[in-house]
Image (cartoon, rainbow over all chains, first blue to last red; front, side, top):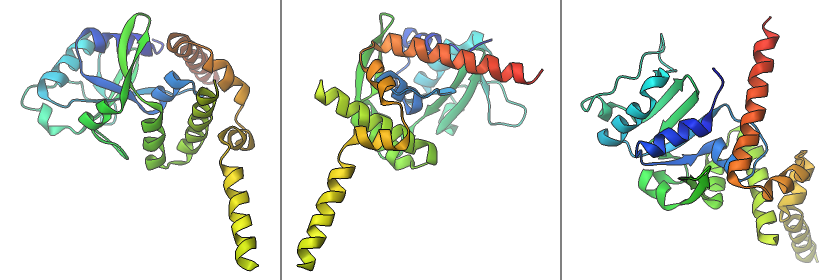
Amino acid sequence: MSSDFSNLLERLVKAGVDFVIVGGFAGVVHGCTYVTQDVDICCDFSAANLLALQKALSDLDPVHRMTPGRKKLQLTEQTCGQFKNLYLDTKIGRLDCLSFIDGLGDYDQVKRASRLVEVEDIKMCVLNLDALIKAKRAMNRPRDKEAVLQLEAIKKLKNSQ
Amino acid sequence: MAAKQNKSRKTKCKSVQADPIQAAVDYGIDVSALIDNAGRSCTERIKRHQIALNTAEKLRKARKL
């Protein structure tokens, strides 16, 4: 099945999952022109939130894509505390759930650096432009260089409008 | 004199780096595509990204034949 990131995010919003869109997909929301293969979110890693996330994805065969044998996502209230990040694959796309963002901090700090956007009448939080630039700079991988250049250019275009 | 030249070099360097549009052009980024995207809604940007991703996925699968 093809990826469908809008559907993936819509499910999370409708399930009441507390999250912020970060990473490459946040760049797309801001206007970057590259193509990204997954959606990164920073979320509250409380058991209640992770269980809500699991429920939202339950009919999409979610698996831990970086474990040997791609183990099924089977979180319980007890096991939720074991994770700092979740690297998932589903029938409609990859979803990376992060509890901490380099250059910004934990979920609360990331949430404070986010803004609401409306996508097909659904409101969701996305990392603001300045915070995204900061996070991409902190990651400092070769592929982040182009992202930073695009984001800086987008910022300039916005300011000159 | 040397200090003045140094200051001038620093100023020049700063002015080159200070234009993010030029920096993007120099890197090879198609700034016209960024300008087009700036005029679109978030929904539209995501839809266009999805189309590009689906096309890339189709091409990747096709290559395996």
